[in-house]
Image (cartoon, rainbow, N blue to C red; front, top):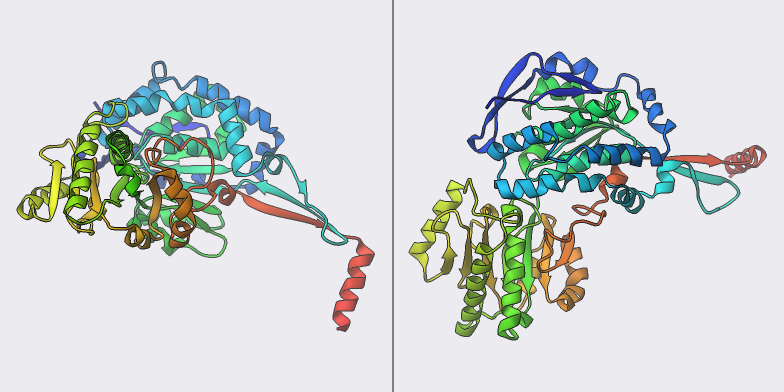
Length: 486
C-alpha cells in the first residue's frame, strides 16, 4: 500500500510535488510534498492575523475541540484508519497497543479534559483576558498569557503526542507548524485533516499546519528558525536532534525541549516482607517496564532493589526478577506485547551475558519476548542506556544511597516502593535531578492529570506573558525627577 502524507497548510490540503521518504526500522515508505516549494506560505505572514483567535471566548474553543473529538472515532474516521495502517509499519508499538491508543483519542477532546488542561497548566483567567495583580505600590499591573508563533517537532513513540500538540495549540491561541516524525507521520495529519473537513475557515484551523520533512534539511530549517517568522521551537527528540537545533538559537527565539530522558525504579526492603507483597511488587514493576513496549521515556530500565548483596540478598533479587519476567509475559496485549522489531544490538548484548553467568542471571531474552537481567553485584549492565524492547535490569544493593546518587538531570520518572520511601526520599531525588516520582506501577498509568513535564511547565512556556502597567502621570513624573536628583 502506498501512503501519502499531505502538507496541511492553514486549512488547505496539498499533495503535489511528492518526495519519497522511508519510515524507521525499515518500515513502509511514504511520500510527502516538497516543502521547499511552500516555505513562504508556511509561516504566518502577519502576526496581527492572530487577532482572530482572540475574538473567540474560551468556551468556543472548547466547543470546537469537542466537535472535533466526536469525529475522531477510528472506527469511522478514514484518515485515522489510514494513519493506523501506516503506523503498523513504522511504529515500535504492536497493533494491539496502537489500537488501544487510537481508540482513546476522542477522550482527549472532551470539554472537561480541555478545561482541566487550561486551568491547571496556565490558569483560565489568564487565557481569557488581562488579570489584575495584587497592588504593590501606587500603580496597577495586569498580566495576560498570549499565544506564540511556534514550530512543534514532535515525537512518534505514541500517537498521543501529536494529539495533545493540536489541543495545546488551540488552548493557548497560538499558531503552530507541526513537524511530524518518520515513525508516525500521519496521526497528527489525520486529526488536522478532520479539522479541515469540519471547518476549513475556522480560526483554529487556519492557525495550525502539519508537514513532514527530513530533520536537518537546512533549506527548510534556516528559513523557519528565524525570530522574524517564529518565536518558539517546541522540540521532542533525542540528544542529537536537540543538539542540532541549538545552532539556530538567537535572541527572540525560545527553545522548549522535551528532551530524551531515562527512567528507573527504587524498591525498598519492604518488598520482601512476604510472598504476597513480593508478587504485587513484581506485577507493578512489570507494568513500569513493559507498558507501551518500553517505547516511552517514562518506562523503567534500571531497577535498584534493597535486597542486600550477600548470598541471601542475591537470591531475593533473583526471585523478584523471575516473578517480574513472568508478570511481564502476562501483561494484557493492549498494554504490552513481545516487541515486533527487537533491537539487534541489544539482542547481541543479551546473548553475550550467557558467557558471564557468574555476573548476571537472565530471565527470558531468547527471542523478542523481553528479559529481566539480575546483576549479581551492585552495578548495572554496561549497556544500561540501550535497554528497550521490554528489557529491565534489577540491581541489588545493600542500601539505596548509591542509587540515589546515580540520579541526575537525565532522569525523568522514578517508580518507588513503598510510598513511605517516596515521601522520605523525594526532596533528595529532586535535588539530584529527578523530575517525576510515582508509586511503583504508575510510571505509565498515572499520566492523566495535566501538569509539569520533564521538570518544566510546557504550556506556561509556550505562551508569552505580557505585562500591562498603569501609573498616575504626575506621580511618575515626580518619581523620575526625584531619581534624577539622587
